[in-house]
Image (cartoon, rainbow, N blue to C red; front, side):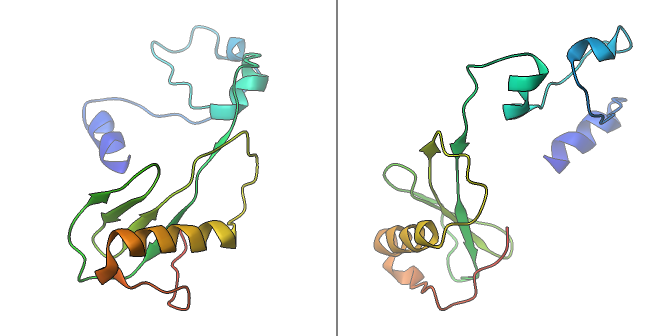
Amino acid sequence: MKYLRDQFEKAGGIIKSQTLERLTDLKNDYTIVANCAGLGSMKLVGDQSMAPIRGQLVRVRAPWVKEFLMGENTTYIFPNSETLVLGGTRQEGDWNTEVDPEDSLGILQRCNRMLPALAVRLASPLLPF
């Protein structure tokens, strides 16, 4: 997202962030408005069709893993420059925003099955997202 934001700004775009109670608070001050309200759209524009889909992932250090892997459902391994992103969950209707240790364990187990060379154990340091 930082890359896209930088490209937008290099092209002359201006980003202004503000909290709104309703879209009409914007008046006609802008040519383009990007609505990033997510679930806040329920209140902002009265969109009651919105519902949460909770996702969780785990980050670990495993510099020997260089490949991207996609498994069944929500199982994946994505290398970054310093960590691996292991995923994940997709829990429709779940408003929980806390890390669930059982979900973390399930992610680690699925990723270990998909790539046994990963050999990540819960005892190894998990990194904050």
